[in-house]
Image 1 (cartoon, one colour):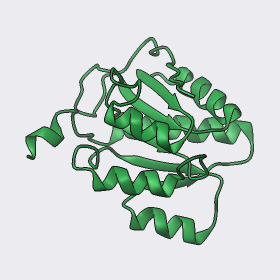
Image 2 (cartoon, helix red, strand yellow):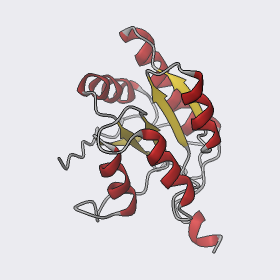
Image 3 (tube, helix red, strand yellow):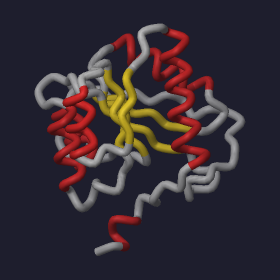
Image 4 (cartoon, rainbow, N blue to C red):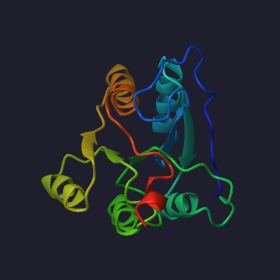
Length: 170
């Protein structure tokens, strides 16, 4: 299933410290649970920082989106990827490994956002160069709070590479 959902850009954007001035942050959410997708969309809409959210439902779609293939030719390059581990067709660890092995994609920060608290999953994600690992909280309010914290941190606190950075390094 080819599904890309876009949340509206949030009104009242703040100046961002991610190297893109007032440009909204592009976020790719790789998540197969429709409930978690709805929560993420709502939480990010409530943020006072501009963002565009694209959603794909499995690992194969994620890689097609990132490589601009198979119906995703016009997809934006994300500034941040939120990646679930438990995905159909290609799991999150495989997706993470392919992203970090690809010279065109490896600079994009990947936040693993999953239900797994398994220490092996945490270690493997960091071994594959995940930028951070967050276990999804069980409660709705806590999940919304986590989503807002992720969005604020990655759009207002850290310096993100511009979408042209991978070309500059060649």
